[in-house]
Image (cartoon, rainbow, N blue to C red):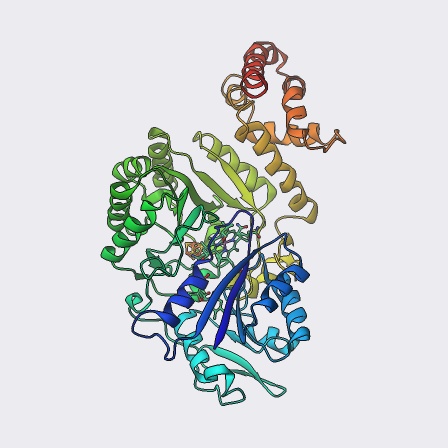
Length: 507
Ligand code: B12
Ligand code: SF4
């Protein structure tokens, strides 16, 4: 059978969609490989590619079955491509899989007559059984698919949802796409490489879907991880992106993986998601040595009522200690908050910012709350007064605690954080305003949001324009807070930073 596995990537994402390579490895390599071997190609598109372009490219490969990997960022685009493809060639069997469609399988099959089946949850075994049930050249099409656990499909006008499938007990059953040479590491278009060292999450955050797809934590053996790292690092990718939910959930293992990374690293950087509370001195040192340049730390909120409502733990003192250690080793990381979570008011967000910036973080950002299909929070949305866009990315528009205009204001706040902190031009002045002028960080941001709203200019060099205007903002906030003497004290420092910045970037 001729199979095409495809997806549409997101600009900020990885060049390689790991899910598709796992599916292919499982079909054609290892002990579960199908006989006779199907012809499996992988083709990944970009978000800027048009529906026409993608459909034409796919149709040219003359597939009999297409499997699309679906996420919040590509589902709408993929459904349009499916409609175009099915219109051009109704004989092609189209299967969807991925975290966006797993919880929506029934709804999608009801609405989209172009989709023949949806694989729910972990894909490798279900997809292989589906392909094998359909038979060589789709010769068994119309056969009974009711035995394929984890599959939803249309039989005539009825949508059938088969029982779910238990997760693969031993991850060794899935051949590594790297070690099995399914990934072409010489491909110059692949500059960053994704890798799973574990699958699943033991936490149960109510806004998250990942733990629903993979409820139990399973580990790939360390010897396999070592072989994978040795191989992929020898191809000198720019970055290795670990897909593990909380990389340091098991501290001992995280350190072992870092040691392996350090051992084989030639010149790559590492990307991980961490829990700050679980960072100790040795981990921080290893992260630095491993050239870990991209660390995501989800805190989501510092409001205990909010955290309880979304089923997340938080230990303020341990968090502070973890951040101090990352700072001590000069490691770059991003602390992530989410805006309209249950009980989280705009004022709560500002309080969180006051506390987080007092830790001198590398970077803080606020994400919009996405009410993901299949999550507990989405089921309970009404109870928290959360109104959200029914279309992806399902952003919350308001809640009992945060009004619609406050949700919109968070966007401006996020921009203020970028300009006043992340860009570094104002960072020193920002800390001085707080320590010498006794102005709260959150008041500085609030003043900036009001001050910035007067400018109509939104051209490409707007950030440069705002940098130039930053002394005016300093005066504005100092006057507003009755601290004009502080303005006079801080102005020379800001002017010098601006001059240095301009010299560095425009000389
Ligand atoms: C890497 C990543 C990203 C990358 C991009 C991904 C990429 N490859 O380029 C970045 C950082 C950009 C990103 C961003 C976001 N992400 Co993200 N991300 C991930 C992450 C960590 C890894 C995805 C992955 O490859 N996993 C490994 C593969 C093997 O697992 P899988 O994708 O689930 O695939 C398995 C099954 O789903 C199934 N399957 C998948 N595809 C197919 C196809 C077929 C045909 C079949 C049969 C089966 C099948 O089989 C696979 C193997 O078992 C996941 C969490 C996770 N660890 O999975 C979240 C995740 C995908 N992200 C999520 C979200 C919500 C986001 C954001 C909205 C978060 C935000 N803060 O704003 C943004 C959106 C970006 C945007 N611009 O719209 C959600 C998606 C939920 C959904 N409905 O799609 C996830 C699941 C995390 C979560 N909390 O629930 N993300
Ligand atoms: S948000 Fe992260 S820690 Fe929480 S359940 Fe999802 S993957 Fe696990």
